[in-house]
Each structure stands twice: as C-alpha cells, then as structure tokens.
Length: 274
Image 1: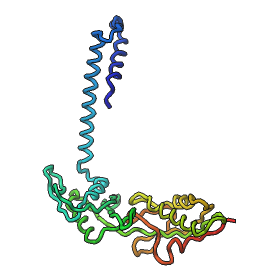
Image 2 (image 1 turned 90 degrees about the horizontal axis):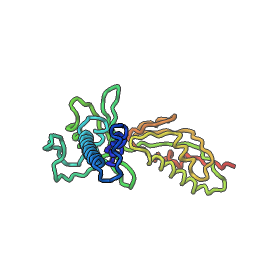
Image 3 (image 1 turned 135 degrees about the vertical axis):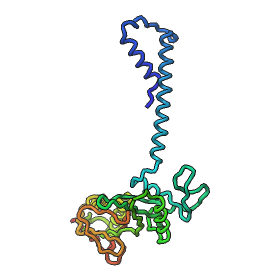
Image 4 (image 1 turned 180 degrees about the horizontal axis):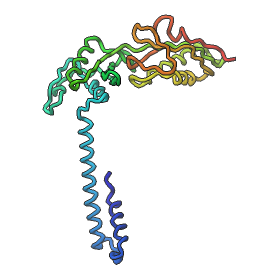
C-alpha cells in the first residue's frame, strides 16, 4: 500500500539526519532548497507506489476473473446460468452469453465439492421457492439445461455431476421443559419457529449441528430445559438417517418434516418444569 507523502518525507528527513556530513542542513524555512528536494522526491515515490498499487489491483482482478477450474469457480458459474440462452465463444475467447441475451438467472444457490476418493466434482443447485425466503429444486427441464451448460463449461477431463433436489426433511423428537406459568400453545408456536428459523439460517450446503439446534430451542423465552430424544433427517423418500452430532444436507438446504405424524406438532412434547 502506498505511503503518504508526509510519511515518505519523514523517512527521507530521518535518513538525512543520520549522516553527520549533512548536519548543516537545519534551515527552518519551508522553502529551503534541500527541503524542496526532499518533498519532490517524496512526491515522486508516492506517485510510483500508487501506480504499483493500481497495477497490483488490476492483476488481482484479472486473476480472480480467470477460469481456474476450482470448485468455487464452478459454483460461481452456476449463478450465471441463463435459462433458454445458448453459450457462445466471446471475443475474449471465453464461453459466455452474447450481449442482449435475456434468459432468466434461475439458479440462486450453488455449491461445488470434489470427492477426494473419486475425483468427481459434485455440484448442487437450487432456485427460489414460491414463498419468500424459501428454496426449491429446479424443474427436470431446467436441470437438463444446467447440466448441458456445465457440459460445455467444464475443463477437459473434469468429471462432474449436477443435481437439484427437494429440501431434506428434519424430524425432531424431544421433550421441552418449560415455565408452567406460560401459555403452552404460544410456546409451541415459538419453539417451532425457532427450529425452522435455525434451519432457514443455515448456509447453502451447510451442516445441521445437534448442539446448535438445542441452543436455538433453549433460546426461546420460557424454555428451561431440552431433551432431544431422537433427531433424524431424510432425503426424498429415503429412510430417515439418525443424526448423532452433525448432518450434511444432501439437497443443500433443509426444512422441518412435513409428513403426517412426524411434524414438529407431532413429535415435540411440552412438559411443565414444576
């Protein structure tokens, strides 16, 4: 980072004072010859250092925009997908969309991870759901287009798979010990909202932690203790998987179970902590 002119000028003055042969340069005048020379040199150094900063910023920007083939690069490209538009080779030599294309950018969440054992790149994508703040899987026809998009973008030799799934479902069986002076129906609503809020706040392709889930419930005013009996998650119609400590979402996002008999209203038991 470029130093200020005053900082450079002070460094020059300190160097001058360190030389006994220059001890006679002690004029208090702001326009002394040696003082003006020091200022001109300081200003020149500042201008050069500023140009170096700008050059470095340009280089960093160019490097950041260059196709790198990293998982993060693939995830960023997913967000640039335009429904119904065709990729072309631009004047820069890179694949992209021609000026004036108007296809909808439907992918709003994306992540990419490489499997160390198989070397395969796994890309998860999702779009905004019908309700504000929710996510949803891409329609089959939309997913086919995204898969074709990556087939043209991928680096030669890269094995990848693009998926878009409905949200994972979380089943929480627990006993909630509460202040007996509270209104139970209102507390039930608050606890359910706390669980759903915790899940909604997870980063895309994030992890569910039992400890943090319990913390979210404990944070509800009136809740005095929580005993998690069983917490499990399922993907699609697959059998639920019991979570012992941590769970990685298969779809990239997760919501509370909505299957009859396993909703939060069915599986949370509220016990007065007398």
